[in-house]
Amino acid sequence: MTEKYSQEFFQDILITLHENIRDLQGRKVYANAEERDYLTGRLFSYREMLEIIKDSARRFGYDPAEMGL
Image (cartoon, rainbow, N blue to C red):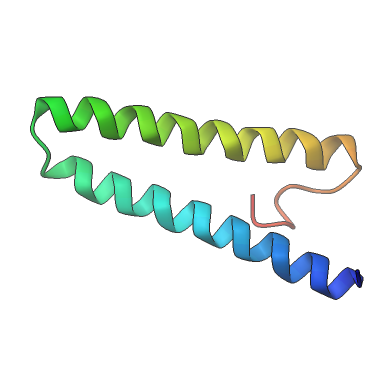
């Protein structure tokens, strides 16, 4: 696997995570109380995933900000 391929793959995952977070935040504005609880849980999961990736980046010596985190 080439480095460029790996970077593109990783960036696609990050873009998808960020898009999903934005979508859930938008849906949460118009949701009823039960839906808001569900969306809040999903948002927590996505944010937790980003934090895991940030932590891994730091352990590998990468700057999370440069990676779009």
